[in-house]
Length: 161
Length: 157
Image 1 (tube, rainbow over the protein chains, first blue to last red):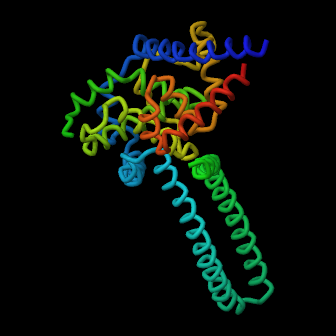
Image 2 (image 1 turned 180 degrees about the vertical axis):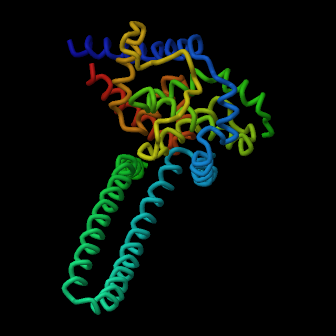
Image 3 (image 1 turned 60 degrees about the vertical axis):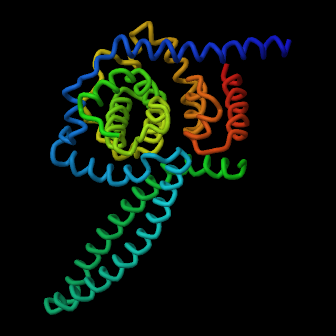
């Protein structure tokens, strides 16, 4: 019974080949390539000025691994993730130092009008900074999570090789 | 390799089925497939200069397209891309022809990105050597991974 099931499944797997072929034929038959837009896209004009900036940034990263194999590319993304962590740590350190200096200067300048008013303003600034920081950390964690699936697979490959 | 825009458009025209199919297998909706397709074309255009004809053109197209699909940061996408491919929507539920495609897509999507790439290359009838070269693992590893992927696909039935 098990053999029969497996045979059926093997047949189905081979059937996938035909399905992919059918899909490609369908795309070739029904899909019309807008060559004018293709030209604009490769000239980097599609998304206006922001698009060009974005594309230049993408190209600057991508050209370096254009000829790499998939694992090579993914390894570069892993390095990017590590660099992002280092960048974040440095960024948080600098931001905290700047915030401390800013609060000190602000407090010294505004305390002449009364320390109570200065404290209220400071609390407002600190709450704003805290909310900003939390949003930043959330975005950062989301970006890092996007690469995790790939890192898991690279680790699997490295273990198997 | 020196390729002008007209020559590039011809290569894309001849291989649009392959490129679009790969992008489709890495996408969750129509907007995403359009985004991936555009990014893949930009990378192919950028990579033309570095393609020296050492490998087969189709192998190179697969390599660049899969690289593009795997490395793109989807969270940065704006979903405002104008579609470069018109007249086809593989995600259209009203299209009866899409039912089989939908099932195939659902199966492939459940695999991890690298496994998705390996199975697509295998379905393309590429040799283990070619798959190993594109993915960057050894031939033995390709055969082990493929065995596991096939088992996974069977479980999905």
